[in-house]
Image 1 (spheres, each protein chain N blue to C red):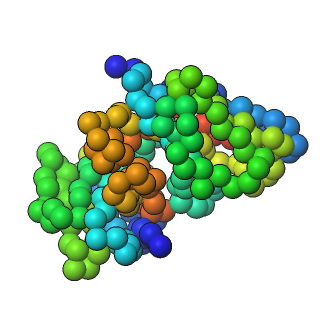
Image 2 (tube, each protein chain N blue to C red):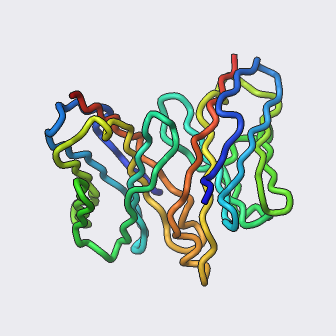
Length: 116
Length: 120
């Protein structure tokens, strides 16, 4: 069975602080995909990143970075020097390969509140 | 390009009534998905269309839910009759078709803003 756990339900930080969102997943598949989505107050889910199970390289995109560790089944997300616009709910998700690839299993989400 | 559009953005209905949600995917996207998030729980997969065909409807909760995608363009999700536990946010998402089944199925999803359904 597929499962994604985001243990932090809400994180509050002051602007310019770094914030790390934890994501732990469970799967028996050898090939799988991991995603992060952002849900701003407007409601839509915005795609941030996709990582396949064979690529454990960390990734950095601007102030965002991701740490994928298969040994601990984790795919953590860090926002560096947070800004008020980063306030949103962030979802980690797990997808399978092949025909079920976008039948995603989502975590419960972490609400990030960045205060000025 | 226009994104995934969902209508209405918010619907309030009474228990026992019928509601129809609509989703317009990104033009040219053959894959269309419905997800929903009921209060306090995770976002859950409902079903997947490839063009007008249902590829996977294993997430549909019961036979009160009916999804259609006539002509392979927009999709509707009807709830009839609605129950209190159907309250939540219903998301639609689409993804493009790649050159092979693997690439198309794993192209990142483009989500709409969701429809917030409140059943009273």
